[in-house]
Amino acid sequence: MALLLHIETATKSCSVALSRNGVLISFKEEHTDKYIHSEKLTRHIETLIKTAGVSFEDLDAVSLSCGPGSYTGLRIGSSTAKGLCFALSIPLISISTLEAYENCARLKGVKERVCIMIDARRMEVYSRISDLENGVIKKTSPDILDKKTYLEFDPFMAIGDGAEKMMQLWEHRQISYDLSIKLSAIGQVVLAYNKYLKKETEHISEFEPNYIKEFMITPSKKSIN
Image 1 (cartoon, helix red, strand yellow):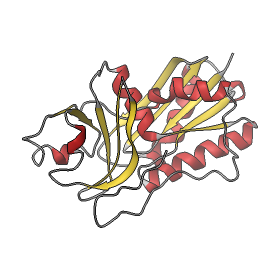
Image 2: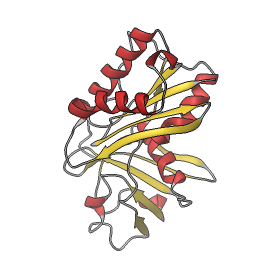
Image 3: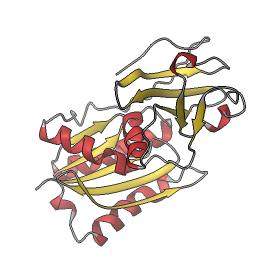
């Protein structure tokens, strides 16, 4: 019986979840306009553990949304996850933030091609595009947006806190928006369990989040997995 704790701090959402054998048990989260991770993350974890009727010693692994995203949020999430793993001698599992975000969309019933965009200031985003038939069709990359960015992928649904600022600029394109879908630790559950079964874990002392801080002057063609 694999009991996993999932931590999500890559955006302004502060979210934690518990799962057993790839099935969600419980979750606790807040979606605000401010970064509250330093104040709320450990409290949310303690509350989640207590209300689920388990102990920290029952945990078999901790999963973390590893980026890209907010530098401060990722750093706080990483420090918390690594601290728990060190203290409990359990594995750390890293999950791509944009892959977890897509899972959140699919769990909400989205069937369309989706472009997940995390705001990275001004007209910059971290993005990933995928559909149900072909999987990932544009890998995670840092991009500077303009009227024609991702034109070759139309039509698609834009999701994430980077999508809102594009609604006016892209208003004449075949793009829909769902800004109600928030990043949540729930999106990690199945991904983390599959990695746990395959023993795809991180070296705790060497692990660093995927910050992706640099941007190109022109839209980036550099991609990462």
